[in-house]
Amino acid sequence: MSTAWGIPDLRDTDGTIIDATTPDDIQLITDAQYQNAGILTGAKIFTRADMKVNVTNGAVVMKWGQDRSVLVPVYAQTITLPPAPATGSVTVSFYVEQANTSTSRAASVVMTTGAVPTGRVVLDKLNVPAGTTKTSSCTSVWDRQYAMHSQSTLGRLSVAVDQGGDVRVKGKTYKKCAQRFTVDTDRNVNLKLSITAGRTSNTGISSIGTIASTMASLRYGLYIDDQLVRTFEIGIDRRWQTVQVESVHKVSMGAHTAHVVSQWEHDGDMSTNLAWVVRWGGAEKFNGDALTVMDAGVAV
Image 1 (cartoon, helix red, strand yellow):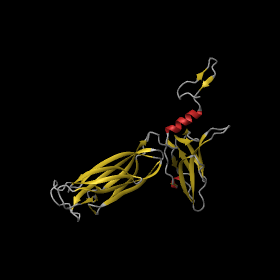
Image 2 (tube, rainbow, N blue to C red):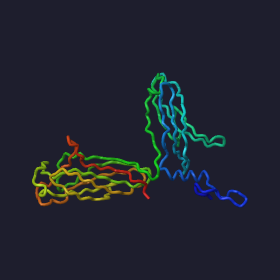
Image 3 (cartoon, one colour):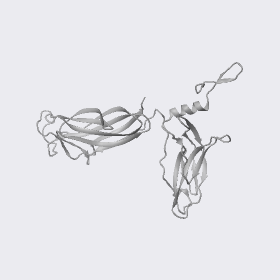
Image 4 (cartoon, rainbow, N blue to C red):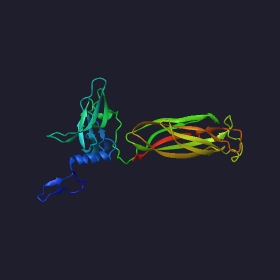
């Protein structure tokens, strides 16, 4: 049995511990707090004017078995690299190691020119060119991966922009803004669609009447994994209006696709000029039709 983290041990009348918080308890709690292993903060690698690098203070989250994670400190230190190769180049990796043996449970930053063992958190990788005598001439070839709290959001997952330019007509459907995104856990995603369109003649001319007479509507369908999840009807006229809509949906862990299908919906009072154009770019920097997939947090 266990006690909650922060609650005193349970002891009998003789002072013997009956229930207590164990390392396994904390590992389970830590794993529930973070979506993935990675850097928390700090733990940066800075190059120098010699063959050494400086490591700054920080901390990382490491996976520690099934449904288990640990928090590992990284202490400021200096690491000396091996001499640069005579020809070509070599990649030097810096990763966090957490020992767990009967004689050592020390945390350390390890340097290697070989493969990084599975389960380690990589702080950086430097490409060391032949003949160099200083790490400041080396190039980082690694994208640092940060640990994400289970209730934090990942920001923008993907975006696709329909730049338009063609004249779209009544009776046809248009599949646009196709994209792919990946999530590491079951999550909620917010599909944000920004539409910039105007009613035109069949040749794309927008000066076709008054604003009132040119009122019409378009239908936009949002799709996840080729399944319709939401439909919006938006009004258009001869002006280049921008309309924004959004819809939140749950997706399972893994890779997914998203796209938009648009079509003419209602003619309004005008029986001709049943066409529209999506407007993008130019000197005015028009938005076009843009579908953005935003992370909205862990699905519960």
